[in-house]
Length: 238
Image 1 (cartoon, helix red, strand yellow):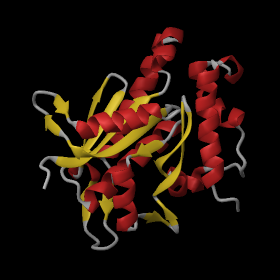
Image 2 (cartoon, helix red, strand yellow):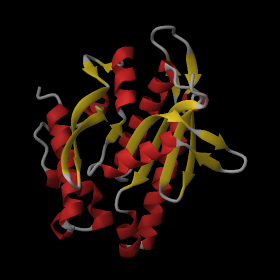
Image 3 (cartoon, helix red, strand yellow):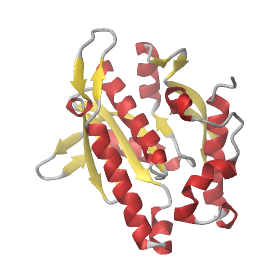
Image 4 (tube, helix red, strand yellow):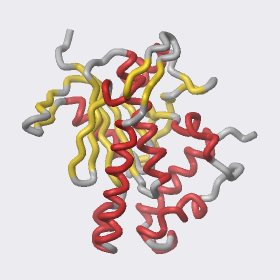
């Protein structure tokens, strides 16, 4: 059995460099908003439906933040820890959007080593989480195939919808088959507009940080277009 095997999530803010160039104070406020979201996650209490066992999410998922990046990691690669990191990542994406902070996330499983006292973090799982998250051109959560398979086998669902789904991941080189967290299923009640949602409406919450949608470079516009396409695909139509 592989030692030091655990789940790792890599989270970063979309367009941070452009935001700093445009308005350094705004960028600092956005970064502070992400730190607040991280702190919120640490206060969440989980109740395992199967066992009724309660625990703080921070007991299962550790977090470290540097610059515009958050890394989450678990103690083990158990199903309980997978469920915990899926909840934590989904909550961060959701709450970040509520705080008008655009983020993208990658989740992988594998060897990961850490020394919190020395601020040392390394391992194949972190590299994979970084690479699959950064490759995706959207606001969302990409997972590795191993995470998808374990989530599927564990039967993780929100209502009747699978939490991790097989889907097309938008990248700079086009669409590729991959796996993503269906965060829409978890937070569909927060959407107050009937689908289909327009790109302009979705982006309007970020306009204060990045300027008018029409002024964005094509690559930046595409990220929001891809996000809205995913939302409309998975948002309940009734």
